[in-house]
Length: 247
Length: 306
Image (cartoon, rainbow over all chains, first blue to last red):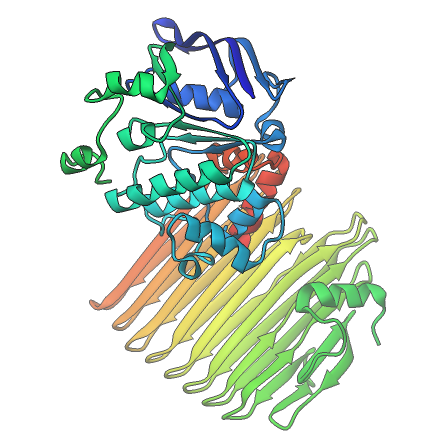
């Protein structure tokens, strides 16, 4: 479904060129739930942005359902069926939650239909539908609305960049259920960037990225045991009680 | 009474799709084009100068007054004085739009001076929309002056909207509030091309527990110029807030001058001003939903001005 062929991504830094993604080859098959993990700074978020078109590779090609999308814009990729949930959702003054969900769904959904997507991510829909997507919403609320926009798009490929970041523990439990339901209902593939053991645990396949390269890739049963206890597979509770997720 | 162009402009400025319900006075090209009064709302023409007096009886509730103005002749210069006397304990809506259609080469200009006397405990919602169109070289100019005198316990909400087609505006609004009076102003402005818009507010809070909230949201595109100058004066124990939030685009220029003057120890006054371009990540987010960059920009601007 999605293939990266010898993809590299370099940025210009003071000390010279820095390679964030190095000659990467990766295939995500149809109807797969794939989680990408690995140490911070390893290139995971950059990879997600390369897929969504927010960044363009400095070398290599990206194919989506047989089409070379390397040179396509964010908009063109979105319309071909790639969705992207931001790690840090964007705020908009004046745009209401309902507006955003309608834009995502590309149709003039009734408020009741839009509410279903919000209920799906555990938000009491009637309290939120008319709210502005602005600074009055908490980080966790925004994050759930962000996920609701991806659900409303219902595309062939959904990419989530650290969906657990900024979400409290209670919401995190629900988030796992959202992904489990999505996995059953979606006609496509889901790609999640995450360190969370419980998200890794529901994956079909796990890809470990470090220093811009894939260091391991395979079925969950093979890859997960070696990751347990490392920073690539964090227990949500442990991290919460350490205060790491209390944003 | 009114032709097709005038009717379209009436739709833009007053949401009128025919003859309005309730009291109204329609002014087209400097002349009265229609008037209706009700048992509680009287409209009479001034004799010394151009304009009307609108008298709303005390206790009038759930009634509305429409006083749209349309200029469709190029080169028309119009100046009116409209006085509103709003009786005690009344609760009314006043819609006063002004639209200019200028397809000639001479400037068209409408200067309206509106004076409001809001009686004790009365509530008024005032909507003023400005709109311009026409492809002539003549400029479309609107210079409204609004003076509001608010008596004890009265409330006034003012919605001032100028979204399109007005080349030059110099808006002056003055308000003085007695004890317990409450003024809320919501201004929405968009300028484009080489348009020029100045908005100047002076609000005096003279009585105990008087409050004012003056908020402007604006978008300046192309090489247009905007100035928002809002001064809140606290002369008593009162609360005041003024805010200007602007999006700047292209080669536009924006000057925001929020001012506070406290002349009493218990005057609590706040001002905020922010000017910035559309955040790149906002455009990117909407593009990931399938919108083009232009569509994303339009959505962001529309939402901001909604």
